[in-house]
Length: 202
Image (tube, rainbow, N blue to C red; front, side):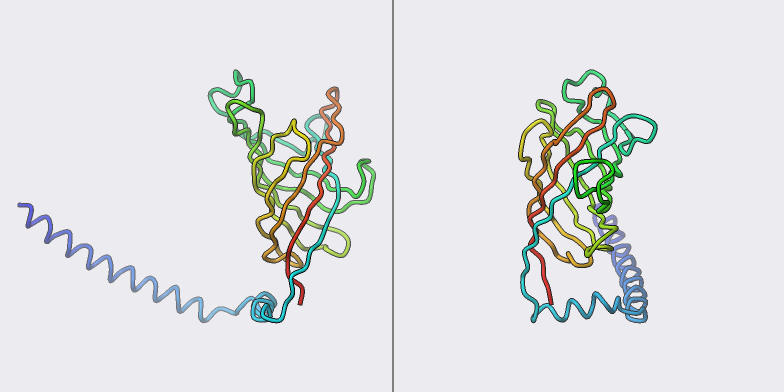
């Protein structure tokens, strides 16, 4: 009986392998027929002649948790969130305005968009996955991705920069976050960010 099961398994595996190979051939043909993303392709092939560049950026998040137009919205929570001292399990979506100065009416730089989740049972810290989207100035259209642990009550919180697009393709580095101010009555926070970025220039 076991030999029969083994034989059937091998036959099915061979048939599925042939199906997967056929699917893979179709995918490869579709990819070869499609146009290459030319600007990125040309940039990639020019990297041998590129040099590493270091850029330091400084700006502020307008982090609006309350009021009529919040920029942070809770989208999920765990069964223990309401009783957790660290708000464990709460997840929110963020679309904060980025400004050159701490004042809300300061020069606009871009947006900080992504997810934050309270991810520590014992200390208040959030897991962040944010895209810094530059909408104005010399970096307009470029992005930087920041992912990491943010212990929000500490000073000089370090977060990894893990990538980017546009000017910041293949970026890496460190983002340092501080709480500039927080109004408990309006739930309005201003977060200071300094980014230390290594990337390429051609």
